[in-house]
Image (tube, rainbow, N blue to C red; front, side, top):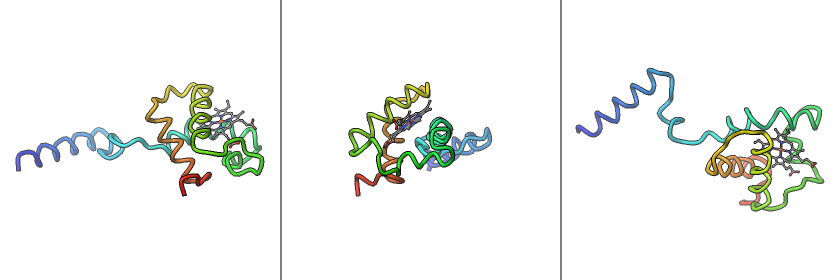
Length: 102
Ligand code: HEC
């Protein structure tokens, strides 16, 4: 009973300072990607940045190459992402566009 109420208290504190307890714990790959990656890719494609992931002559053909590419672009973008964040964005792009794992 005591444990539950202290977890609740922490949630309430986080919420009251504007941090959702859920996003405080999980990496939000979509937000990371949208804030660091789309602008440059959109400039390259002249519009929808995600065209880069769907184009016929795309560079990336498996999960390993995707992870490596996200790592390189994350450095290029000076994102300051951790390995876990690079991995999360790589999984996000796979789920949304590449579908290697399905
Ligand atoms: C300063 C520009 C720039 C930024 C910022 C950038 N990229 Fe890229 N990205 C590129 C270029 C250039 C390519 C290679 C395109 C080519 O050679 O045709 C590329 C290609 C890619 C590809 C491979 C697309 C394919 O062909 O399959 C992925 C995946 C990718 N970027 C992910 C990211 C991620 C994730 C971020 C955010 C951390 C990011 N990029 C930020 C310039 C950028």
